[in-house]
Image (cartoon, rainbow over all chains, first blue to last red):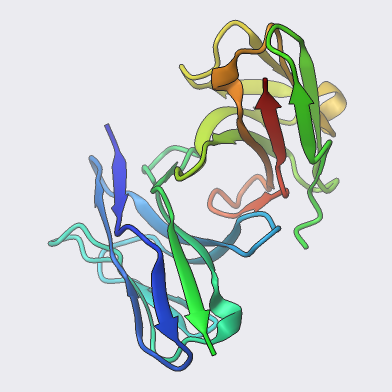
Amino acid sequence: GDSVTQMEGPVTLSEEAFLTINCTYTATGYPSLFWYVQYPGEGLQLLLKATKADDKGSNKGFEATYRKETTSFHLEKGSVQVSDSAVYFCALRPGGSYIPTFGRGTSLIVHP
Amino acid sequence: DTGVSQNPRHKITKRGQNVTFRCDPISEHNRLYWYRQTLGQGPEFLTYFQNEAQLEKSRLLSDRFSAERPKGSFSTLEIQRTEQGDSAMYLCAGGLAGSTDTQYFGPGTRLTVL
């Protein structure tokens, strides 16, 4: 079945450091790919998405590129802030389905 | 704030008791999803409604679980004869028809079964 694998956390960075959170997936066909973020005490929010190979999703300084050849969708940000501290979830949605499959989440802690 | 509310936010119950959770999406959300999230895991799909019709259920949704969405507005998730393994965060999300990708999550209800 479909699955999403994320790097384990927590990822601990200093403010203004470069962030990469790795995500790889297994799916048949051509899924859409997503990153969700969950800030402390809040519900999950869609951060960015990409619907086909080589698409780049971006939002709030975060970017991720849909790489079909490596089945990856790594999340990057050039300069993190303390306010980016949260749990980040990679997810896929198979074509023709409304139901996403989520990874386990990666906690990011950014120190001043 | 996504506009989706869930009540209660926390529920502690004894094994064998029944519990019911409520989700209130915004009025435009004709789709509504329930997920379960355990510690260190991502959300796992349980069931989904379009308006009042329950269109899909996961194998995770045992016979002890039932969900309703009367009148296509709020939804309830009931767990009968709770077990310790039911302890988890139960998430609700609303969505719009024609926007398959955007789901608006509520803050969740944390269930602890003693």
